[in-house]
Length: 250
Image (cartoon, rainbow, N blue to C red; front, side):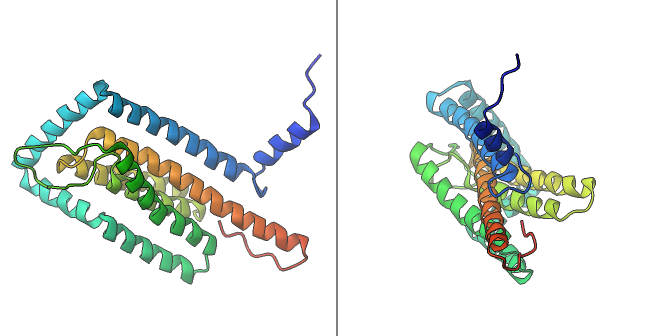
């Protein structure tokens, strides 16, 4: 005989996968993304701490890129500009521009997601750097000299959060499948360019930027899921109390 699913478990599962529920599919996907990203980050962090073969690959890639960068002033100059634009002040300015645009359009829950994702992500990254205290790549003639820690990359994390957020917003308001996919393709290219600039300029290892990307994806997912939950709860409360229901925002 087939096993009968308890009604309470059935209701719980239905609520977790409801596209419109207060704690529905959006929160389930956000938590799932956070768990996956955390698992990837943990694997990379464990490899770095244990001195696994990945760290030897880190050094080989860093040395090869450094030799290439010293001989290619054109690409080096371009990537130097990319890395400076995506410094902490640059990311905050870009986020402020995006936030101002969202505020003027009345997208307050998207604004909540942005306000928690970018500054919160920067703080999280600093905490992780001081947790692992990994030294940056060392060269006899460095292109950039930094005294902060290396793992995970702050530039790559910030780019992941900011461009991932923009991609999510653009995709949400697109009217076709190509329009929904294209923002994520462009965001991935931007994140890859920023991450590569940090490696090319000799201030990060490969594992630093990979871990930062995982960190950014997980943090952004839970920030957007949280803002969506706040929006759904507000609309549900208005319906229960017979008040005007705001249009769906996020």
